[in-house]
Amino acid sequence: MRLFPPEEWLVGESLPSKYAPNRINMILDELSPERVRILCESKKFEGSTNCAEPWYNTSYSIENVTPYMIKQWIQKAPTEKLYLPKPNIFVPKDLSLKEVPDKVTFPTILRKTPLSRLWYKPDMLFFTPKVYIIIDFHCPLSSHSPEAAVSTSLFVDLLVDYLNAYAYDAQIAGLFYSIYLTSTGFQVCVGGYNDKMRVLLHAIMKQIVNFVVKPNRFSALKETSVKDYQNFNFSQPYSQASYYLSLILEEKKWPLVEKLQALSKLESDSLAKFVPHLLSKTYLECYIQGNIEPGEAESIVQEIEDTIFNTPNSVFKPMSPSQYLVKRVIMLEKEIKCCYQIEGLNQKNENSSVVQYIQVHQDDALSNIKLELFSLISSQPAFNQLRTVEQLGYITYLSLRSDRGVWALEVVIQSTVKDPSYLDSRIDEFFKTFESKIHELSDKDFKRNVKSLIDSKLEKFKNLWEESGFYWGEIEAGTLKFDRVESEVALLRELKKEEFIEFFDEYIKVDAPQRRTVSVQVFSGNHSAEFKKAIAEADQPKTCRLTDIFGFKRSRPLHRSLKGGPGLITMD
Image 1: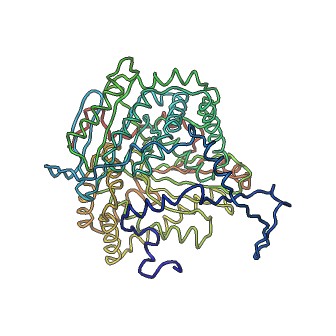
Image 2 (image 1 turned 30 degrees about the vertical axis):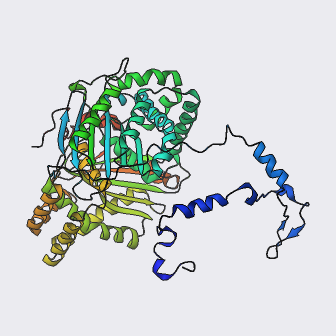
């Protein structure tokens, strides 16, 4: 604020100035060896200086650069190693907006082949020369065993490592990309100015097609991955509780200890053999949104197919529809509270933690809004009672959770003062106490909370990436409710308080007839005595103690999948 006048405080140095090429050339002409000033700092100069600055008494010396020295520099310039960088191939030249004849409100399936499916939506909201592209590689061989899971993960890590050469040029040209592991393979996302997007996407696809395992990089990234798995033992107890909960809920999820064992035995030559096996069954789920015409979007996917499938000796092969993976979630038993109690992986950590999970329903617009409304009404009182009043733990919250379209409530507490069994009992007590507040909710408060939820749902997308993320989430989950906001807001406007209370009584309150609960409790070394007591106690009525997670999962039915196979997803 001392450097700029008040009217320029918000822009500072970022205010664009008028382009003046003559002035720029004049300044460049002044940059010559005769005008150079070189500053050298080193402890080796101690005792050989002849001046000192007056503020901190720092010693220094000044020497003139002689004409002879400049002449020597010019004669001995390392011309073969000193060069300007190559032109940035990602800098956009065309920033025009494309004309789209059909006004498309929601994503549509533009193209479908045995190799891929393309979802497309033009930018009808932001009108910027940008595009967002997702290429989801569905590889059924990516997670059929712990060995396959860690091999796929390391393949993705190496791919990201190899592509670092493009990262800087792409970023400064307004492009970005990310490659990450998914539950059914891996995903490539690119975004930014549409003009040179195909150049970046082609470079990524060529790197995938020509992938080789470099032993030195394999060793470095394997070591990093091993450390990451080992460091999970030192993660916060509430993170460990969340991991055990996912292990209980997800149909096929490999324990970290098994993945670590598989990773420790993995060698570069075995990974080199696995990658062609991984890619031998592949299906591409593609999503393109932004400043792009339908024909161009189709040609991008066709080019990707040609690059990875339709080349001589390609390891990529089409996937059979029967091989399409769908991840499903365990259906908990109603009116039964399951409890999984375990000691923390780092007994030196003084914190214990509990995660109480209440499974409510599978994606349904009317049930969604009721559960969201309850979360909105109860999250602050839960924090106030469990954190502020009872001071059970610094980390305390109530939130919504969705696992592959199965909605639930989740209450998390991490504490040094009380053991997880006690924390779990206090969560139950909160729900019992809060029951009266739900039943006594005034019409005014009910309408105020409904309006607050409507307002939050009607908030506009802030940018293209946020809008694309919403639509891709619907495609990825298989729900395809692209009009989710409009339909749920319409239901909220018609929702009666009595319906909301009935929903609470049916699914959420303690001893509700449709309540399905699991409590994951992680005990620290401070609460080892309480742990021994807890596992020795007999099960209470309507409770079930879990001792074998995988045996329990095999005994339970699964929620249906919301996602069909290739060509089976419809807009109905």
